[in-house]
Image (cartoon, rainbow, N blue to C red; front, top):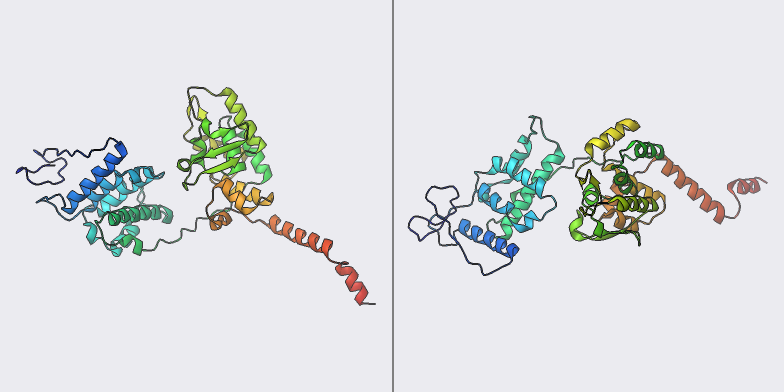
Length: 355
């Protein structure tokens, strides 16, 4: 905005009498132009645009610019990130100067964080807000607005929310049988290939090669920003072939409901679980099922990680459920190996030694 004397600039959104100041950035690319706009706003906040009214940067001022950055808007978690910043971080830190935020302020935020019903938020929920704050301040550091990140100096406790719930073979059959028709193919691809729900509902037909039997996800399709090829199991291939025969050319999405792209299955999934008599199970647990079944089937770790989309062995191990039957089978495999490779049995050795 331009100040009354016409010689100085200040961000003055909503101020009566303020006039817009326009810059010619000499760029026709919209993304580049928005980045340059953000850079100009940053310079104004820093007082580098010869503004008499430049002042230290408030968190709420920087947060507004942060959410408008292309690098932030392109995040897969942008919806949750925006909610964290606008609904929780700005109300708490908004009137503080960026340079005045201390680690103890971050700790205070964590301790006072509440859900909408007034009850304390879960550790995982608070950690999500904490991650958003850390990234927000890290971007400010990269742009020269801040010297250090106080949010990085406060540890985030482990929520200990690891789950090892996997379906038994009988539970899976029961769940599939009672599921609604639009839910069945979603369940199959999640249970057998371990794709994330977001990867499933955003899948488009140009990513599906039914002839070769592969699903190809590009960097922008995955949570980890790593492209990967997923081989279809025969069940998945048949399910997708049926969908392809009935597809509407008006939609490019593979999974639809009443002609529209499928967005959520919470209601139909909950209904199916109840009908199948399955408790303590979430849709995301299907990834645990896929990982566990691949290990039991003998798929090597590196290949299984690429199919499911795990970047680290630590995460892969977390998604593997080791049950009593796995331990029993391991013991049986060891016994079989020793029996085939050891001359004589222990009983024979004991009998010979007693003679």
